[in-house]
Image (cartoon, rainbow, N blue to C red):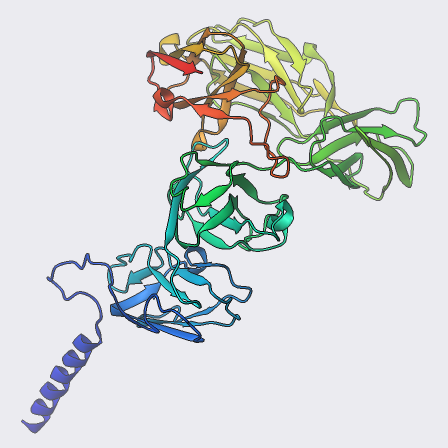
Amino acid sequence: MRTVSKFLFLLVLLVFVSNCARTGTPEGGPKDEEAPLFVTANPPYESIKFDKKEIKIDFNEYIVLKELNKQLVVSPPMKNPPLISPQGSASKFIKIEILDTLKLNTTYIFNFGNSIQDNNEANKLENFKYVFSTGDYIDSLTTIGSVRDAKLLKKPKEVSVLLYRIDSAFNDSIIYKEKPSYITNNIDSIGFKFTNLRKGKYLMLALKESVSDYIFNPKTDKIGFATDTIQLPKDSIINKPIILFKEEQPYQFKRGKEITKGKIEFGFEGDAKNMQIKMLSNVPKDFKSVSKFEIEKDTLNFWFTPFEADSLNFIVTNNDFLDTVTVKLRKKKLDSLIMSSSIKRTLHFRDTFFLTSNNPIIKIDTSKVSLFDKDTLAVNYKTFRSKKENKIGFIFDKKPKDKYRFKALPEAFNDIYGIPNDTLKYYFATKEIEDYGRITLKVNNVNSKNLIIELLSGKDQSEIITRKFIATSSTIVFDLLEPKNYTIRVIIDENKNNKWDTGSFLNKQLAEKIIYHDGIKDAELRANYFLEEIFTID
């Protein structure tokens, strides 16, 4: 009996200890939906004449800190970031250790964003702030506004909004070397709010940074700025959104580097539209070369027929830039020719059948290329070579609900190295006309501006399906569109160069305005559906 009693005692004790160790909601109880509550702080919230090195903030329940590095904003910024603890474990308090020397007569804001959550259900304590002043009073002015991206439809996230006090020491170069007077961010919405500001004049700008140091790096960061000086307390609401853009960098040549035998990459930064490569070295009579810019990469690829040489000399020019470059040749192996189709199973009526290749194709033997329809009848086609990419297009009269068989025998294509293709076979089909939709857009161009009309789709509505250029009121028809989501935007082409131009902070120039059509903004187009919309631009 004594053994049984001892066993039951140990079992009850084990259950009791196990229940005491649980910090979650008891089984069957109501789910905790309340955010943690701030209880007290030492020194107290909104203390004045602050001179402490440590702050302790207490809450009514156990909390954890999530994504503190992204969420916490200290304004004005400190040279040496404070130490926040504990991190990685639950606690009923937060301790802040200040490592910096605080400025005199300054109101400091520790904005924790949404990083403070309860330990059980992850309920967020939204926009929690701890405020104190090293002076005799707490600054109390506020201003609110919003941020948008110049080109992208999606909301810009994790954008820092900065205020620089305009005084006798202020100049425009301050944003490249000094941290601002005040900082806030938009966290996960387009809106932002500054609190506890001091009366005065300010420069306001927004940064989408690769490194959160609050210093503008034109090579990596997006920037936006308010064109007018912010005057507080007058400008408590910023009516115009701050528009983010990536500045065009000045052209800078990097280097030439041999990638494989017969291929050199010339790297650069900035605008290279007039960049040219000219060979200085003596070459054989049968020498051939092809140069093309790589899409979405700051690289000019240069392919050439190899010959015996230790190095090649070039002149690189771009507008006023001129330099000589020597590239050493050490690679022993050519790139094998790889060719593939631009489509898989379906050839849509707006699309062209392309063959893409890693090396430039310089010879096509159409006698070794055949295209047949579902009735095994030969289909007439024409070929063309893309000037921008290593692509060969095949143009033919596509018929609805038809099937096609494409075949290219060996040596139908030869690249710049004389390497022929292997046998290529592709099978694809077209759909019925009724499987597509149409968008008709009536553009009321009130002031006869130069407009670039773009139809977008794809991920984040960033893929350009087609574009049109108009300078008067016009009706535009986008026909034979696949059933999916589309967006229409208009670029106000102020300088009439038929492309979107970005802005410049130092020149106080904003990016060219882009307007998205509210009626067709990520709108679904169904098969055999005709959508008619009006877009007024004034």
